[in-house]
Amino acid sequence: MPTDTVQSVETDAAGQFAAGEEQQSRGLARLAFGFTKLAEKYFPDAFIFVILTTIVVALADLAVGAHPLEIASGFGSGFWSLIPFTLQMAMVAITGFVVASSPPCSKLIAKLASVPMTGPQATAWVAFVSMGASYLNWALSLVLGGLLVRAIARRTDLRMDYRCASAAAYLGLGSTWALGLSSSSAMLQANPASLPASISQISGVIPLSETIFLWQSVALYFVLMICSVVVFYFASPRGAQVKTAADLGVDVFDEFAAPQKQERPGDWFEFTPVLPILIVLLAVGYFWSEFSTKGVLGTVSSLNNYNFFFLMLGLLLHKNIRSFLTAVTKAVPTTTGVIIQFPFYGAIAAMLTHVAGSDGVTISHHLSALFVSIANEDVFPIVIGIYSAILGFLVPSGGGKWIIEAPYVLQAAKDIHAHMGWAVQVYNAAEALPNLINPFWMLPLLGIVKLQAKDIVGFTFTQLLVSAPIVFFLLWFFGETLAG
Image (cartoon, rainbow, N blue to C red; front, side):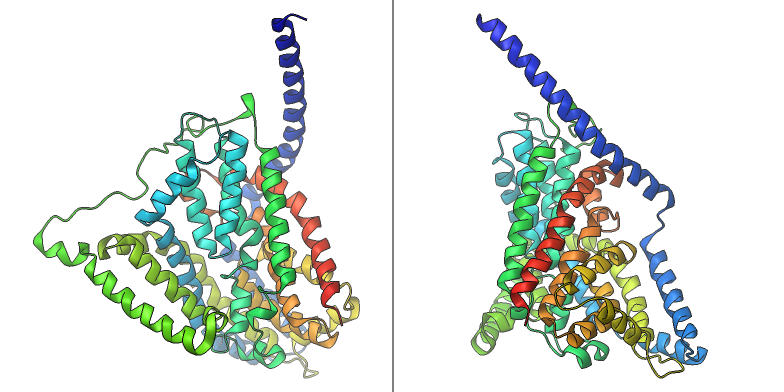
């Protein structure tokens, strides 16, 4: 057969395969984009759900016979109960952003951008990097992933679908972040100073060795990472389906962080590397003392130490005070939701756990009794996982939602003698799922890649369809290894 005929047949076959693949992807995209349009039209700001939840809990207290003044007292007394934890979570976001936007990280991103050789490889690579970074810090994952997408998009030797790659950059927060070191619930449970009394009296302190460092949790993390990379490799558009950054009107050549220069003699203090180095040397001495007395695990279990390390690392990587403060200024807007919503979560938790009805029983005890009645030790991970995933769409905050859920979830786990640490990890794995279709946490990433939620949610929705059954099965399967 002549060469040109062979090429023609191969081209026709490839075209037919691409057409079938395109039609199949359109079917999933139609469902996802239809959901996105509904969400954009009817889904209010996440803060509205906090207000509605507060009202619902107050009404529930009234329904069980609680006195209105007791409900109001619970609301007010609990409102400021999470101030330390609120600041800690805000610092997680700030320090992650500061580290990812530092000059050394920019050089690292440039090297990472040179690794993939094709568009689908690039998308899978972004997913891998994003989820890898999420184990250290969820904010680092978002910023590093977004900047990596922009860096790859600047390459002229490959065509990468900018929408799909941007969605891949979100996978760290949408799949694996809560199984890593910045897990709000795991860190909260491991820190007695941050643990509210309403939770401490049920479970006490649960060390990280019983949550994120369980081999079952680590295995779950790697399974999700592998599956996500594979899904995004095959879901990545090819050929005529590809929409590059230029196709979408996104300028990826503009500077994310404009370089700054010393303009007057008084600026020396802001630009010299001497001051950051001196401060970091003090921090090194502190961590040496902590490692010597508490060991590595005891040191990293402290959320304050975790944030302190990333803050000092950011200061060192930026090399001067001016660059560091500029990064902090840009990071602060990402903490808005945490700062304004967490006090309400504290108030909700107080109304759930401290306000008793006419029978002397709180809403928290009613809910825990409900879970105990419908779930034994075997199906507990599935029941709690599904519940946490659904509630996570309405309350998009891993730490704040844990404050609300923990009292009755942990009480139920205690009553049926389930593994308390695995109950935390069930929550962690399941509550990350709705992030894949909830635009709340997409905002920092979207600001970097200059897209809208509708541009990426079709791809993240596809990931949700694959991840959800895998997560629920593994939560049950690994839970069986911890039973008894």
